[in-house]
Structures are given as C-alpha cells and as structure tokens.
Amino acid sequence: MNGASDYTEKRRTIPEIQAKIDAGDAVVLTAEEIASKMRTGEEIGLEDVDVVTTATRGIMSGTYAVFSFKVSEPDSFIKASEVLMNGVPAVVGPCPNERLGILDLIVLGTAHSISDLRYGGGHLFRDMVEGKNVTVDVTTNEGNRFSVETCLSEIPFARLYATRHAFKNYRAFVNPGKEPIKTIFHALPFEGGFREMTFCGCGELNPLENDPKLETIGIGTRVLINGAEGFVTGQGTRSVPDNPNLTGFADLHDMVPEYMGGFVTSAGPEIINTWAVPIPVLNEGMLENILKLDSQIPLKLVDLAGRIPLCEITYGDVWDNTDLNVKYVPEKCINCKVCSVAEACPMGAVSKGENGAVHDPELCFNCGLCISRCRGEAFSANLGTVRCETGGCLRDIKVTLRQSDRTRAVKAAQELKAKILEGKFRLKEPVERISWRE
Image (tube, rainbow, N blue to C red; front, side, top):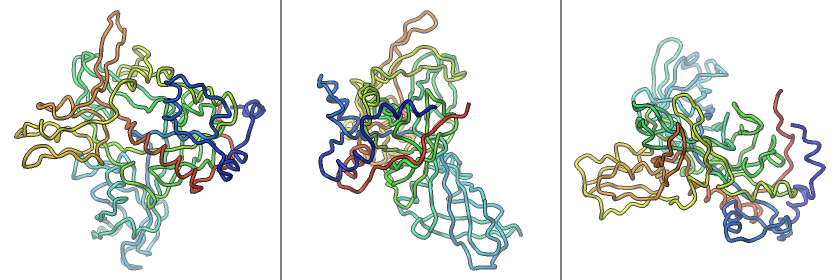
C-alpha cells in the first residue's frame, strides 16, 4: 500500500484530535450511534465527529497465549517434555529454563483437552481470567510426572496473542449437499439441502470496515482486546488488501471474562475474542466509509464444503430487523427429561435444573442455536431469513446460528468511548503504516 497519497488528503491529525479530547471539545461516537443517526436521515459531516469507537466479537481461531511461571523449586527437574493445563496441551518452550523449576509455555486457543471434548484453549483462558484454579500436569524429560495447582494471579507473564483477528469481512455458509457436515462453522453437524445458514462478522461495527485503508490502524495502535489495553502489531495471516485482518497482543491479567471464552463446534472447541478500536476521523474519505450501513457491506454466501461462492448478500440481510439478544422465558420451559438446548449450547450457557432449563446470560453468546432446539419455545429471537438465488432456484434460507455476538461488540465500543472521554485511553499515531508484501 502506498500511503503517501492517502496522507496528503488529511484535514486533521491524531494529535490534534487528542488535544480536542483533552480540552473537552471532541465528539466521540460509537459506530452504532453513527449508524443510528444515519438511519434517521441525519446528515453527518467531518465537523460532527472526531472519533468513532468500533468493535467486533466472534470466533477468532488465530489465537495463542504465552505463559511463564514457577512449578517447582530449582533443580527439581531438568526440563519438561509435556505439559497439560486443565487437560489442554501446551507447547513447552521456546526457552527451556533448565533446572529452574520454571515453565515457558505456548497454548493454542484452538487446542483441545485430552479428557474433555467440550473444553479447549478458549475455555482455559476465560477460566484463568475469572480467577479459577488451573491444574498443571508436568512430564519431565526423565519421565517423571507431577501436578501443581496455580491461578492467573500467580503467573507473572501471561499474554494473549492474535495471529488473525478482526477480519474486515467474513462469510456466510450453507451446505448444499445431502449429508450433514461436521465443521467449525456450526455447533452441530451442518444440515444439508440449504436448510440452514450460519455467518460471521459484525458488519458496520467492525474496525476494519470503518478504516479499510488502514489510515489510523497501524503498527503500535492502541486497542482493547477482551477489555484489556493492547496493541496492533501488523497484518494477520491470510490478510489481503481488500479483506485485511490484524495481529496484536494484550495482557491476560487485565482482560474481562465476558468478552472471551470457548465456543464448542461440531469439529471441536474454538475460541472467542473481542476487539474495540478507536478510529480518529481524519478526512472526508474516511468518513465516507464510516457512514456505510450494514446494507452497503457485502457478505458472500458460500458452499461450506468447497468455499464456492453461491450468491452475494449483505450484512443488512443478517442484522437488520433481527434481535441481537436471545430471550429466555422460564415459564415456557416444559422441563424435558433431556434438555436438547443444554446438549447443543456451544457456550455451556444453558444447563438442566430441577425445574427446567437454567440460562446464564453472562455466558450466552446470543448465537441463537437454542431457538431451533427448544421444544417448548422457551428461547426466542428473530435471527432472520436470507433470500438467495443459486443453481437456478430462489431460496429462503433460515439463519440458525450466529458466530458473532453483536450485543457485546456494542458494549465494548461503548466502554472504549467512555475510556477515551475520561482520559483513560489516549490516541497516538501508529509507529508505522501496515503494508502488504507483493
């Protein structure tokens, strides 16, 4: 990307905008607030907004964490060869820490427990941020085994790293085939025959939808990752100019549990993350992108098996006139002997109680899968239906599962706005623009 021409169009700078914030003169709006103004027909010019806070929450597989902590006294063992954290395999290294009794570990967000098929790295990270104890099972190079209990407050180094987060645009999926398919894009085997659709992405709230040319998001940009202050370090894997994503890191000690976690798919556990990113509005060109609504943001509907594009819809087709939150009415629960919702819930947010289903709103991802599983219709939300013409047929396909949680993306953007206005989060120029290798 050649940034020179982009910078000549700037009408104001990030330091100028931060100075307005310091003086109490800046207008900071969330992406949702901007969109609401647009939908009411309000005209918004460069003088009407200084900063837009954006956010996205969803499954972000490209995640790992690095830990370094003491597990024994010095000279108790030479080196560790295998380590499990709550049954989740860790990669030992990169520093061997010979005879120090200290482990340096890398845990993948998509790593699966060897003993619990519904537990993975995402669950482990959230449990740690919640302050829960973690069992660490160590096998040494000599073949000895021992276990210790620890918790995040006892681990001095614990950072979460993103290798591919916050895609500008993702995909919607259907299965045109006859047989169900196990996949990370569904919590159950994905039914065939165009009977259902899943999708990812927060549309108009997404940071990179609001700054697609990466004019303010660059190396060193301060962001919130799962509620903790972190930094962008560059472009992520599979990042391309028309659909970028980001790498970054933040400290697990400062994260907020409700923004993270594990999400169980029919292909195993995945990991959820939340990004909130400030977009200083520098010029009219940036504002033009910021003012785009869901209905103007394309969303490709693809064949799950081969990723073959079938038709193009928009994020307006999946978010407009739908319910962001799933509603649970306990009085409607018919107290099934086996609760299908509890069995299917990818977050474990529903359990079977003595008098019926028990719903945990803080853990709920608002994916909506419970709606199609509940026999008593105790769970409800309008997830929408998408019309797609493919293969010579016009089909209405029901959305049965969402892999992005717009409700908490909205909340994350609101919290970032508050931090900026309170002076707790300061805007600075990126150290360097993000560019692509030819």
